[in-house]
Length: 512
Image (cartoon, rainbow, N blue to C red; front, side, top):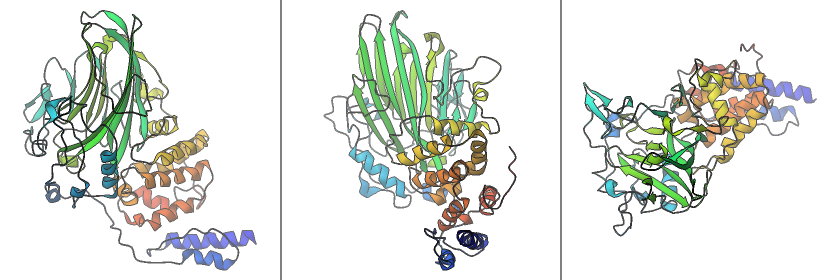
């Protein structure tokens, strides 16, 4: 009887999935009679989901946000802030998505409200928009002040900076850097670049370098850990912020520890950013308090500083005497591709400070390779592309997912699913499911939140088809019930719905 019911149910599912009609498939929780199986396909209705989901039209991008959205307390001992609170009643009517209100509420309720940054970011909301002249016309970028100049329509790094993108960051000759530019494109410390569509939290780097005084004499060591975390807007991932833990260990016995969380975005050129800090503890995973993380040692010329610049909306953590720097350029969730500055995250280190690389098996920035074989190739999983290998690496490393936007359980669930895989099934799962994280129009259709919870649920379920022998039909049903089976020009989507990328139905031969 069980076999008969299973066969009937499979046929009913196949009819629903192969039909051109718009259907919603309700999961069958219990199979008692054949009638229960037939009820599986009840509930047809017309959907409103658009076939294609695209960018905001240029005309709409120009519609601005009239309120300031910024609160500055002039009595702050550290000067004006970048920024303070937000007025949730003045969200962009034409651009609001479910995730916007979630993160705006969080920005209002947590983080240090004032006193962490220098006064250079002060001014009205209009002054804080992307007003600097763009290089190369109205669609060009603004060049980084003090680092680059506009030459023949391009932002070119000035001396002593010899490389980098003049609209993002420039580097001197003796500096190594890793970068995450939106829609996250990861460039490792070995200058190898790979797409990184990762919705969760990850370790960027963990290093130790020499601590030096103003005479360039070694007087101790500096240890740094930097984590990044991403969010999502209209199907595209962006760097939302970074967590930093620092330990300055003097040879004399003095020890200075500090930790901070820094995150946010721009809205029509107006910054919406929060800062949290804790002095006295090396907290790679938090929790963070409301301390200022500025530290000054006048005797040795050492300064630890978190600052912001108004022209390029740059947040910078710098310890010059350790040769260590972190840069965050927040993403503009309204301008998006029209943003004047290039958004992203960069971590740079000076190679003459005797760098020691830690947590090599976990850090996504990897470590530099000075040999012929790139370091990225050394972490490549046979049978997968570099981008797929890096995504598996990110999901399977036990990085604490203390995300500000939620989605913690979903991020962890994907890692658990991958760890249940044999190497062969892991390769099969990535070939079958990777496209779900790499197709913005599909992503935006399936999940409009900023934290990617629904997307991650679907991706984990897809991985479990291979790693846990879950029914592929469940994933197909979820896609159809969401209305996203109609998104066009994604071959993998239609191959998945046809069963070509499924393990169980119909059977197919996977080439690895």
